[in-house]
View 1: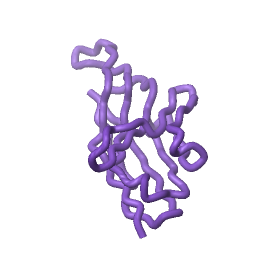
View 2: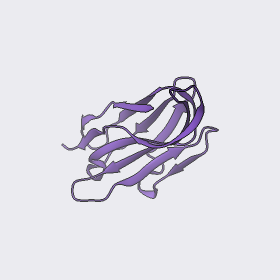
View 3: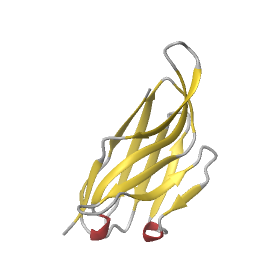
View 4: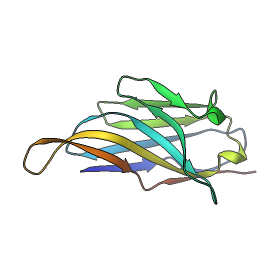
Length: 126
């Protein structure tokens, strides 16, 4: 019911910047919170940043002041601007939608929960 496609990952030197994008598609009427998570090799997935439909944001302490999350509700798209990147930011970054109001095959409005993108690799290395 909801598909998420991420883009923007890659290889960058320490101190550099990247911008991730995640576009949601499907029979979407409204999306609540959109977020970015990351998972480094051998570690658990962790929240990086999240943003509600009304623009309230939440960041992991490790990225505060360096990363900025934003969204375009008209395009059902969330962005993550990452500045001053560090080697410890290296991970696969995943987009998440916690809850979306969608129209099902019968035309009814239903809440669909917990969707994930396929992930995009971010590598910070010299």
